[in-house]
Length: 170
Image (cartoon, rainbow, N blue to C red; front, side, top):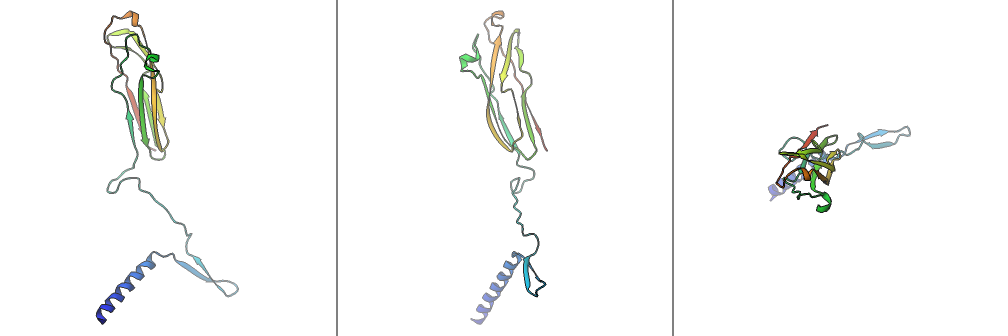
């Protein structure tokens, strides 16, 4: 029984010493009146840190997603008003590091349809975005105006609209 009690007390003693390792240190000095003044050593500030990456991975947590429709159909002699105003709806969601920038833009806001150079389009509205905030999500809309319906026969015409994304690290 004495051995068990001695082992238990030894464990308690070891554990009590580990608490001291996390305690704040103090400095005791004697003032001019002969009294001891106890002050904390150092500046007594607590530093909080967060991880900018998942455990076991390296690099920052910055990421972004851009959602762009693959196809937008425009009816013959259609106008944006017939669609309820906005034809191309795209969006982005970004979580950036401090000082990072994400620039999204359409290469060209005007052009013509393939095999029909007289059937032209113009894009207006949210044709670009620059993201500099640490967390941002938005829905963007672009109006499409098509001209030259009377210069081409009834058929299906296509054109490609190219979006670019430029991510710049701080």
